[in-house]
Image (cartoon, rainbow, N blue to C red):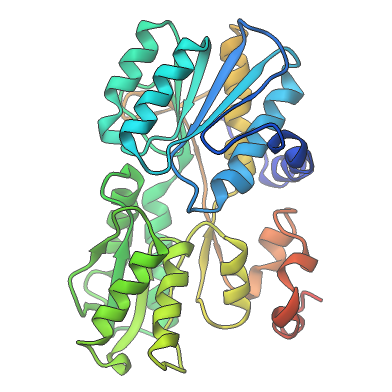
Length: 355
């Protein structure tokens, strides 16, 4: 498995992120050429949605910057599907018609993306399944998703101090990663905690859906019985916490998360969220850029591992709690202390030794 040292890769990617404004300036939300010439060296980046902040804040600009760094005559065309599977299929067709030789595809529905793979291959294009697995892709890169879920589950049990009743909010059923997160979480939770309600598979990872679900449950379940909440990502964690606060819950139960969103890091420092999973996105986005450039130039992509028959790059997730914010997202340059500790979070940062 090809995996560069975490600190070095993330540090360089964080510097690359400084190029993001210039790159984003020539991009529209749905389809945007980031042109630098090279009609035969067109690379398409297709992301599934924008409600999760990582995609357009980190993945897109980091990927574009890495391609620009490695290939001055390459052109990147960007598309966002807005969680619409049909729209994404049309975007793949558009990318092919515009001459994309490599398609970096984070699918809305990995299980339903086979037709997109076939269309790309029929046109002679290579496909990199980005962050979510697609059977038949040429390459795949993501984090160890079952480990993500297991780490979340273990952290929740630890934060709860043992057993008790929980609510469980998973990701979208159409997202293959969500099933892996859920499987990993159950491996840590089953037999140790009790589900107070049927677990919720959030159709589009929506924070609003998460807030509504918890609000509905609070009309049936006394808040004091909820000893913890498994939220599969930070967006949902935010919705969960908003629902609990709106219901007048002052002593919040431990709530998990994932993606190390800035708002989640702030909630962790403020004692509102127990943890998040930091997936060093610069590692993934940089590797995607490197592999895409290698493929468009006909070069070797380096050592890979096998995942379900697809050549893959699998990266390690990291648990972030209040006591290691400084040693993870800050030390890696993912966030600046000034950004985390703005406004109402200054005192919480000071207590955590961040300022």
